[in-house]
Each structure stands twice: as structure tokens, then as C-alpha cells.
Image (tube, rainbow, N blue to C red):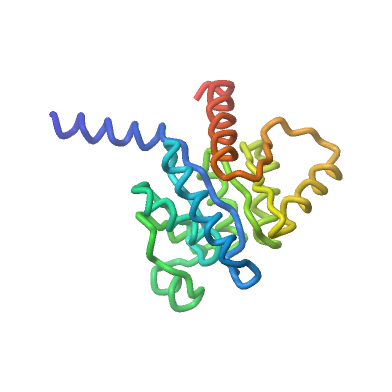
Length: 200
């Protein structure tokens, strides 16, 4: 009876813990060492502020964020485009380390993006290209709490500002900031606010 109660408590705690997705480029070739440190700090901040880091189980910026999460002693969950660990490593050439759990979706990158974003309570957008923009637009359409990480090291934040402007639709669930710590705080506040509003 005690064991069952402990398991139920753990399940409830995991359900209530905010799951914050880090959406950014898996291609780190256009990013420098400073961007790598920002990615790690972002993962650390999610964990230190009480969240779980969720990524696309990829290389590049999401990988650095997962690394930061683990260095901070937190949990890291990944959603892979592959159908199995073998396809994940051999075909997609993606890493398995710094992950506590990987869900092998088997839907390729486009399908994985949908499952990834919908499995998160909030999403933080870092430096990226078309895949990151795809994840942003899914989350935007879903009214998901979004945090956009601003930096002079990349242009993704400016591209997203233009998309929002041209969409002719106001969205109260989007925040911007240059500081990872402050951005994580803002996103977690949005997540709590939205959960209260939705009655979850």
C-alpha cells in the first residue's frame, strides 16, 4: 500500500512539474561557443526553476540545453524522429546521451515536431532555421506559452517578430528576453497562468 502511494505521488509530481521544450537548431555549425554556453544555461535555468527540459533529442542547441539540464541534476526528455534507438543513431545520427527518456515517434522530423510541442507546457525558441520555425508555428497555433530567446548571435528572434506582425493576430502567450534566467521565469509564469485559466 505504501509503495503504491509513493508511486502515485511520484506520478502526480511528474504530471505537475512544468515541461519546457527547447526548440532550436540541431545544426550547431553556424553557432559559436558562446551560443553553446547559452544553450547549457537555458537548460540549467529550466531545472533550477523547477521544470523538466524537453527537446527533439537532437544535436546542436537542444543537445546543449539537455546537457545543462543534466549538469543541474534535472530531468531531460527527448522526442526522436526515429522509430528505434538504432535508427536514431545510425540513420538520423542523433545522440542518446543527456537523455533520461527518449520517445521514438517514428514520424520523421515534421511529425516529431507536432508530438514534441504538444507534449510541452511551454516552449522556448532559440537559434534555428526552418525546423525551429515549424515548431514555433505549431505552438503559436496551439496558443502554447512561448518564450523567444533574443540574441545578436542569430536572427531567429527577428524572423519570429516578423511572422507575428504579419499574422495580424495578437497572442498574449508570447514573451521575449535576452537573458535565459529571466526568459525561463517569464515562460513558467505564463504556464502557471494558462493552467489556472484552463482549469488544469
